[in-house]
Length: 235
Length: 163
Image 1: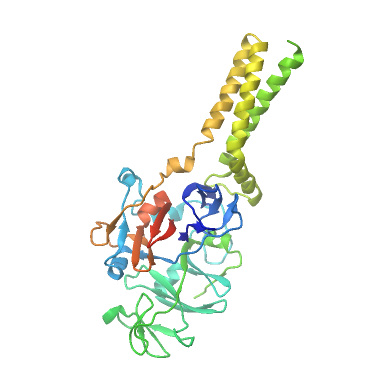
Image 2 (image 1 turned 180 degrees about the vertical axis):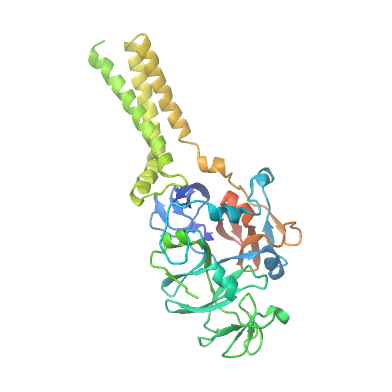
């Protein structure tokens, strides 16, 4: 998700094409073409500019509603509802051919990954590994990170493992059961319990929140294409 | 009319036809799904798209001038062929105004929302969620995977939700 303001101009985007199966957007105001996955201008007057990343999460609606009971949900455009993705859309997409293939042991082009850019590096995690392990501690470049699975067993988020105030790096482990306040992990440094929003709900750090890290859900071939220096997490 | 006065308009019309056909067809050939795109050819195709409105306008203007001059100078069958070429230039220019991608995946227009409590969507549906200040919004993937782009303003911040 991207901010639409560049050099003081608010841009309005249109779907304009595709580049190796990642779509291109064109803005009305300057006619510049932008790559969706990178937010970078690839052709036109604003070439070289980049859109500002706006943090977003990919979650189940149920989990999001529990966190944001007063939030708003985008409505269908009635004329096109019948053309929206069927329930098995992601299953069908996994079988669609790709035009790029990057040899990586144990990875197929359309394996779903969580990709992270932080600490001056890029790193990818098989989404299935996140589903299976539920909590992954790692380091991306200079940044200690954790990936955690939500209580719904389908949504995932990433955070920095630096505790707020003082910058101490903590190890985290999964709490045995989801407890009051939705805590699902503990840190070994203070014993505080943290929920899926990355906020401490029990213990000495109650009320504090970990720094969010953008985790992009993407197919392996697409992540690798735009992050040629990426490493891959191994179980 | 001298041969030169016949050949020059015909040449102008033919060149207009060829250029307008190239400016229409090349981006369609390069920018399409399930085809590997090299960086160089994509850059050329995008440059073609960028300058296409101007080039198409010139092709139509020059093509029409060429057609009119030729029409006056040659009777019969060749006139009809020239007229077809002129019509082709106009057709290519008109087709170049069509955004095929927005014909396949209609743009969302101004997004509308309902409260989290009102939505009838299944709780298992995946959404892309954003929170800016006190405002939280969810964009169901079933919708964004069709429209691909949602131009929105969240808590005063213009954003584009993409999928």
